[in-house]
Length: 145
Length: 479
Image 1 (spheres, rainbow over the protein chains, first blue to last red):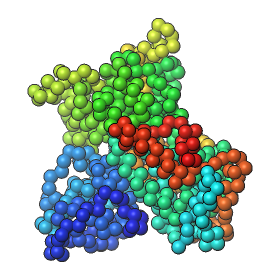
Image 2: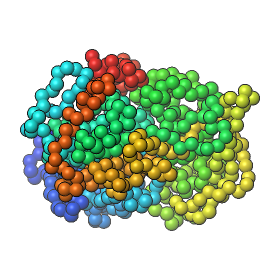
Image 3: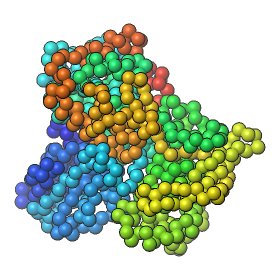
Image 4: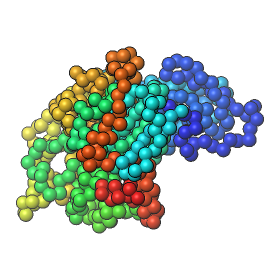
């Protein structure tokens, strides 16, 4: 998130579930530099919760703090993992539609919750808009909300 | 490592500052909105030896997050917590109530800082450029939004809401926000941070019908699906569309990307499909209506019998040449009139030049730049809407600001900015401001204003009641 560990946004640190390490789900994030970062979360945690709780350093991730008001927690999955992630609400799709580099296997991290079946899953943090030339790529002429 | 290095003229106590170990690289950011804060955030993270000072014209920070985002979209404002953390950073200082361009010049800032990042956004309006634009009852959307969001310079707008029909020109998210605020049930609005003054005015409003008019067709609408869905689901309202305007859409749907497709499908469903029974009843019972109208450009705003107030708008009927985003509206020669008592132009914000020393492209209304580096001005940068034009949501601005910060960091480390020679930073600017009678507002001063607004809001069951007046803000800041 670009900020020191002590200053994570409030409201997202869930009370730690009383789980032993067996109960944790391992997630491998691939960041924008292609580096693999492994983290563990509890079933029920969202992927955004995991990023926050483990202080994973993805620039600008989760700007709206998990309230479906932005698309900055955009993550991309393999087909296989995507199928296991569960249904997508219209509300999530509406915000996902604004994400740069949207794919058919994209989801918003704040809406994807960990389950045991997702053990070892990989989640790629896609590029956000890298420079001014790429803003022309955005097919929806977005204006301020 | 270093103590807090912010100081404020509002009180005599100078918060301890360790002069000799202060961060060596000084960067100043002009504009305390999302672009300014995100640029600062990224700089602080990337450079351990940089001090970032944010100058903001108003006493209060956050720019369009405070004055642009709709009151009923509070989650979008959650970014304020990350901005607050940035402001509290040991190497960051906020100076509100400083007008760059009049209280201090950009040249003076460039002398005091290694790098200056301009992120003061777009405070002007694009005008329609048609006769009658100055009639009473015609307002730029930016001003209308500023009015309900408590922007001090719009507090006396007093828009006339005693007509039945309002026409909004433009079909972006700002237009949809305005339509939604005009038609939302008061019981919903009164729980938000909308200003009490505008809430009272809206409670008396006679506006029952809002038409949102665009130059081009349904496939070119600039608004996004969340905002459109909010209109479709708005209690006590029904859609009033012209089904024939959607002819041929179903075919076009087959070949467009998913975001545009879902948006178009929602429009089509709302405009063309016969509603399910429950929805049919809901629409029948609704007391208000809204509609999209396409292929219409304003030709003239028409006055009523008094010659002073708007009573209608004359529109050119267009056809589209080309397809998709690149298509162009071409007048057919046909003309139409819509009766209305309120016209809101939502055709774009516009950046203005604030200092003659800063290069400005009047055609694009941006500061000419490459990757945020202002052309022909070493040490001068821009981020946010000033850099790219007034398009994009907060996340767009965030990425844009990170890119500019990246350029600054590159230049600080490569040696192309003379970052090794000492610059005074705010200690150079402070005395100038003092001499000119300018008293900056610190971030903790803002926190007093914040607390007062929340206190007043709590009394009304609202998250805050914004102070509308700069003098009142300053008075609260000094308590």
